[in-house]
Image (cartoon, rainbow, N blue to C red; front, top):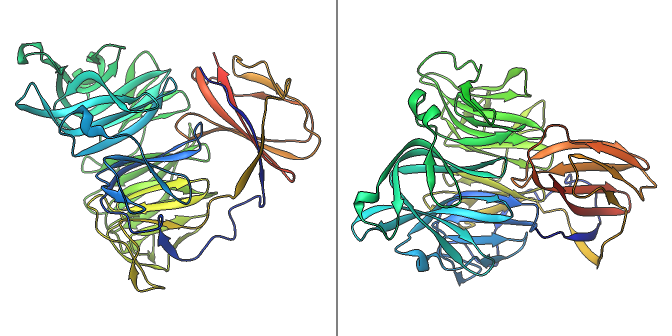
Length: 434
């Protein structure tokens, strides 16, 4: 497993003075829609999958990476077959995984293919999936696939190799294996996410051994979870209801309502610095009139004045910079410029950093690997320590002023990113929990 030790210095400490206008993501308007933004703290890039066909004037195919100012194509997934788009992306065991849409399995059966990035190209796992609405998540270094999976089979096999997968399955290193416990009791989930060492799939939770009901109040049977997102150590859940859409906040023990009376369901959520951002085809949101995007600072919801329209459906972030897109590829319009800013737009600027050296400082973090408890040395001033998992979710935050111990608690084994912010700048380390 690779270890990267890099020193960064930042010219500002917070994403407070952000740009107030929507801008084109890149040098020219992006063409195509985005299914998923995925910020990867290890590569310090935001990966994008969907139907993006061009950005920065260059052709793209299914997947791309955003570095805060420009795009890079991530391979050509057409090598996997007749892929028209990619549906989701996640890092598992230091490898990026995705699901492609529109693959032909066995020459005639439409499906999707599970593939991974080897650093140079997308490589087929050799396993195809039937059904639709597939979501990826990672728990305890195991890749999970959820949704209306239906079934799967080796790509080069005959239909007789077809196996029923139901609604929940995991990758065993060779193929997907149906989770019989989930499939025998629960409905197909609309989303799946890891939070505090557990896997959440709609109203169900998996502790690594068994699935059970999650004690979340959905008002009545006509309500359902549409999207889940982890922000500042808490799980946020958007609920679609026949008469009232709303957002819940869960801290591991208590569930609170943070937004109510939303006239259309929330389709995605993302972080923008310390703010939570929600999007959807709404105009009325928690008592305010906000078009398609609402921003929450922990107390109050506000809108983005510059958003003139565009049917925003997907959100992401890159180091505090908000990314907005429409899965249909419709253009987003800026009110300030009265112009089309493309199907992918930015709001605000990423935290500016410049690399001044690349080195390993012995003893800065020890032990590494660890069991989740480690010591930081070489700290001589007030420093904010934040730890993120491979999904970009914050799992720990602490202020220290000298040598100190960090205890992550009961977190899954794997790679984590350590960000140390002080007046001198920003330092990033990769640590491993065994």
